[in-house]
Length: 500
Image (cartoon, rainbow, N blue to C red; front, top):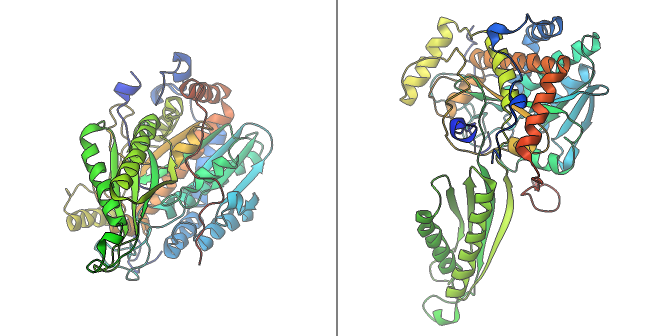
């Protein structure tokens, strides 16, 4: 995920076979009790409806085509806002299954919306498909690039997009058969790893008609997420000075690098005086070109994060003052520009309980001996305990905080959002790294993808068939959001499309 491996919080505090290795493919307030009781424990549930069982069967029936679609996107490995073939593959597949597709939405050529049905409820599902630079890898349990230096799906988004579309297709077939009434929408959301395409789609009102949306993310374990993500803001910090000869007349110069160094020193001193939940990290983008010229330009790229957006806003105000002070001390000019950012995810416990119940109903994952051997070899190669694959479902309670941000958070403030994580990679193996690429290009990834499609399809059926379940999800959303007005961090104007 973008800057993010789904980051759990502390709810107790805040809530009271094997493919051939050929290189293929502020939670604010506790919601009312009635909004929490969306679903009974699995043991007490009634048998699955015909529509739910049929939707799960549809995923199995289409399993080969979903795997092929995922493998194609795995092989394309296109990075943020360059996912032209990946987006087209998903959009074309949706059209093939009878969806109405609107392409190039929210100013992004690789964003699209696919719709089937009419009327309410309108249930959406989100799919990502961007890769990460420099992570090319064969579908092998040892580090071996497919193309040296090329991109790879180190966050499993090839699986993400295919599974989500798979769930949408399964629901479409139930609407078509007359078993469900309403509309299903697949949101093709690009650039999660960089600019956050969902944020621009939210800004342009593409989610405004949805009654609820679902999303999932590849992981090394499986759970219905009672979790948030960190809010974050993405900044460019620039200093402009005056060039001069560093030996002949340095008094005529004003060093932009001096300004940047003082600014970053201030950031590092500030670390002692921020909350333990806050994070600040940066890289120096420009810092002069040769030693004998007083540099007139310097730039840093800085991210500020916290579990609460209000704390991020406070950090931003303080960082702006650091820029002003460093500029005064060095006779330079400082500019702090917000380039983007994400809100924290607004958790929906009622939705998580629906997902959890359906994960238990579907049962544990099953892997072959060859797949377990693949997983253990990956773990051996990366120096983590050789535990193989996670097969069960983690409990809702006790999920621990890790950290990270996602544009799913922005969506969650405008429409109730249900999120699940599903194992597609060996336990403990590094994320945003070659093991995720390798697992996502073979049967381990395929099995997780199909499990994700099934649990989302089953939960979507619940939302269509049980008005009380959808009402509980929506009531909790309204209670948690309160009177907060969502305003995106992204600047005015179009998304920052690649120039080439």
